[in-house]
Length: 132
Ligand SMILES: [Ca+2]
Ligand SMILES: [Ca+2]
Image (cartoon, rainbow, N blue to C red):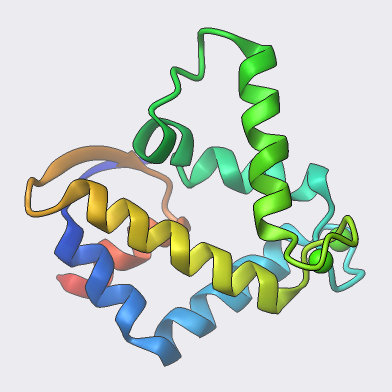
């Protein structure tokens, strides 16, 4: 973990470079697919949803407050990824929805830089490294 300054432009710049973004997301997908069956289950996804910090930044939920509420939000987010509702998230679904989330985060951040604690192999960290 390290603390980095992130703003909307950092994220946008990363997402808009489609080739680089696609490679990073595919890498991440492969890492998350711990049983290597080519799709992500709910359990495999939850870890990444936590790391993306979407609850704090996108949904404004205090993750420490109410575990049941958090679980509900994660479930609804999983469904959001699972476009064809077959209970699994494939690479295309993952890529498309990750892009939407990153764009929404960029939108939420706007031009106001924010300090965030980022894990070294997270997408946000890749966005920051890309910019520097
Ligand atoms: Ca899997
Ligand atoms: Ca699916």
